Figure 1 (cartoon, one colour):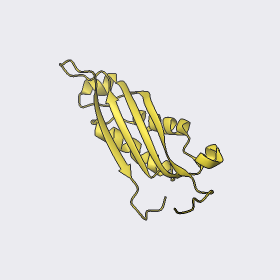
Figure 2 (cartoon, one colour):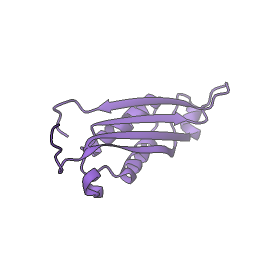
Figure 3 (cartoon, helix red, strand yellow):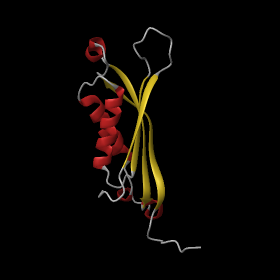
Length: 135
């Protein structure tokens, strides 16, 4: 059995569930004018998370900063599709957090403006760093 490097971190994921943001996204002009609540679920994969051994916030991804950045991106400008919203949030999180190996973002409209009874509609995207890419 190979020796474990005591200085290396263990794999971990930072999860945010149910981040609620008021936005102005949608295909219709009414959605863009009136706006609606958007719920974000975010998962950030860390192949090596030193905080698993050090117990230091600076050795991981701060979920408070994740929430702040995701909310800022989601509320910043109007977009037509949830796909674009989720992709922009994921892209910005990968840019901001070099320790992240992959980011998954699920964007949910809990009250979609469609004439059928539905609990919610959602889109999920996942971006991963390419091997050899500098963080």
